[in-house]
Image (cartoon, rainbow, N blue to C red; front, side, top):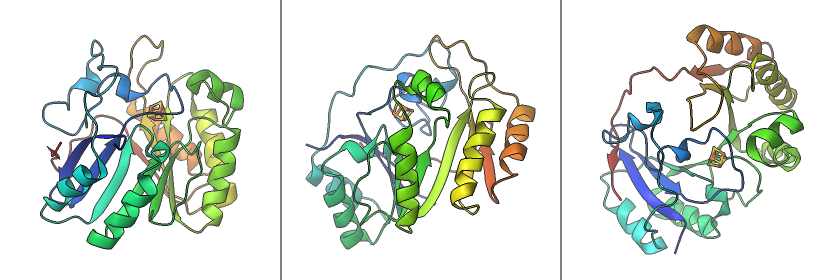
Length: 248
Ligand code: SF4
């Protein structure tokens, strides 16, 4: 059995998203605490904005490797496979799965990760690395663990020459402009060309923080832009440009 519990597909860009369960961090703003299914679906798209919503503590079923491959085979065309959900790198079956996906679909495999665990990236084409905080005390407060290994892994992955992206969440008065700027300086010290995306915090459970305004996001983008050539953002009020459908 794999850790995969949910599969979605976006026909227009031909993206299949494989959602893995289980994580080695416990982020206070983890959106899986609100919704464990893809938030780009019609039936779930409002859940992450609902302050009352609390997700089930775990999925009720998991898929075998064969079930995952059969589900992907049933799709019209697959260009990108995104390995996401909670933390895909924890699944011992991941290296074999991405190898099979390469062989059968010649897919571009993208791993979304918190970077705490270094795995073989042999059949991974691109990494989206979530840096929660640079300050270790803040990182421990937010996730329950030190970031030292994750930061080392960021450097190691870059040395491997894999295409990398980074992302962080802006949380006003917590993981604020100064911290985002420190993260950007860290990334820029490795490679100024690594694309960096700043996401607006969406309120989750009983956290004391508020959502940042668009002006605050723009300020964070400006501060990060001192160190990086390509900084983007998600303010949380954007319209979806393509629909996703649930496969499993
Ligand atoms: S790393 Fe991602 S999946 Fe894991 S707890 Fe943090 S936000 Fe949730």
